[in-house]
Length: 373
Image (cartoon, rainbow, N blue to C red; front, side):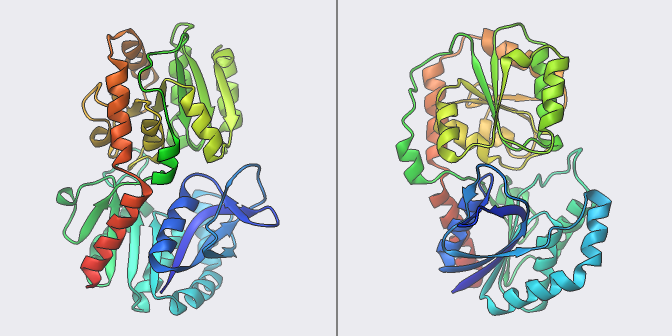
């Protein structure tokens, strides 16, 4: 049984294999394992350092990357529409199932092609379902389309929201890039307290909606104690480096660039607390990577953060998105509070053990089996 997956995810080749960043490759490997074969349509970009290989079970079909950003990008998709429809239709028609990670213009187009050709569809919305300051008109159109199409052959999954909080026909799911095998290899010291000085880590893309500039502004307001490790890369990196220098805190911030899974695990194992100041989020895979290493998370109260973190001190702490002063206050409060770190780290680890790629795969497979009979 074959699945056609269409994403706007940027991927590149080193001549011997296709690579990308983040947890996308691991999740596509799991989806491919459910169905056996996969045609994976992704946008091709220039080669970069690092990266995670796309799954060997997938036949990668590179498609043209739309030009520019925002409105210009949307216009370029319209200009290239005959090309995109032609390429996508070829693989949609020959597949048994179509999978589209949403939101995104190219997977949105593939979703409607799947419906038009009568193919069983798995559409998975991975951004914040509740509206945030970053919600776009395209996000609203995508969510309205999912509500309209839900049911029958169309499996509609929403990341970070429980079934009871969703419109009829939509189903909730978490997000993860953590396999049970990888989890077994991670053996953190859960009995430790804080380092001296305390070490924080941010892991993720360096993009505006991730709020990393807010994090640097907050660190500039702290005293000289904490150290911040920034693991990840993206278009905002140069400007973030400039902000760190202009705010006088560059000496306490290390930019690590894009890390593979092993390198990221090493950094997480040497840090005390993960910090994730996104302006919008659904269910961040970075939370689970941190939890697996016994790291509590300070994160913005967006998306599924409250459910994943629990009340303050359960598996971390919540902060207002986009406010450096309030984030600095939360960080200072954590560093000064009497915390039983071993118990906190154990709660984090247990949560990660219940949210692996194996459980994620089973959730998708069970919903599909239930809906498709």
